[in-house]
Image (cartoon, rainbow, N blue to C red; front, top):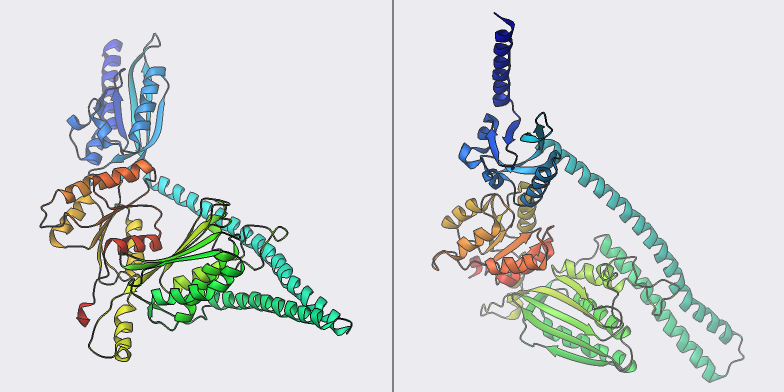
Length: 537
């Protein structure tokens, strides 16, 4: 065979081999024209995506890119077309199952003899497992760094706490010893002796309170506090605490104002311990409110819960300290600049006791000098008239009303992330709820055809139908079905406009990930009244 013919045959054979390799390689190979429209995809694309060529050619391939990656992908691709530089990006591409997997996407320009681009050749390589392991390692390292920082903060806080403890204990001790020595000298008149004894008594009480707080916190953290739970009229209990605080407020010339709903209902509580919670909050508010200031205490019903708010016009809380106001070993000022006596354990004790009552407590303040508001929320218990005396009702009330806050509620949780589903299921089940899970919007809609949950909790960013599309379909159902079921958007989208978008779509509440069980439970119980225990009806 003449050399030219042999070379031509060899070239054709090489081209054929190249085509076979391109078609059979597991890499997802593509080519594109100089304007960026893609004109060739190998077999791996069809096997992975489950779509035909028509769903890939031109710019149709964009629909396969994850919604969060599309904007950056197009931006980089158009920049490469404009500059002639190679394209590279990590993005998520939808497969036939509807799931997304991470890929490393690359494209290189092919130039002619004159240096001009006449086509682009690229590929997408599946890097999902590597990406997940890298992210998991990153999360682990970040968690380890945060744990190290937490340990350093705790150690620093403990050092500050013990310095403060020494300071706070020595101050009253100094007054006690000083006046004791003066009295023992026997040179003082009766009036001075009386003054000295009063000072000793006052400082002994201060020191006793400091020691009591220390022991109380120690018992709580050791899990040695037991509650004697009884049916308590919250309004009456609050009235009694406010009345006992009147002399303290009058001595400091602070006005006390109470707005108490006498019909708020009953809670299951340890009377002494919850009285301690209210007293700590009220006395704290009075202590940090200047003369002629005002302290308000409100008691009201909020859905299936009772709320007690203690509001003052005092010194307020620094914004940066607000997240730490209930922490142990933390105070807003340093021992050297502290103006109030105490170890700062009062609010930490309040938080722990409220949690033991299955309640929540939050602090709010607009900053220094703008006062503060502390809100305690407890689940209300239902009154049942059995026709017998109150003594005989006690056991029945304790039996039916010590239920967990979500007892009797069926909750549908929808999320395409399996780990997120399991966390939500575990968290809500431990609070008494019956949890049904769905791995996507389509599955959730199918479940709604057969079951009727009390609340829907749905992620927003999901493949196929997202959370917005899902809730719109639910709200468009006939009114005889589940169209009015309360729904909560539990999502990583945290901007104000994301919340507005969720509300417009049809959700009643918008909660930002990561999951905060306490907040989610409170929102659920606000949306749905306590479900009666049918076994006692």
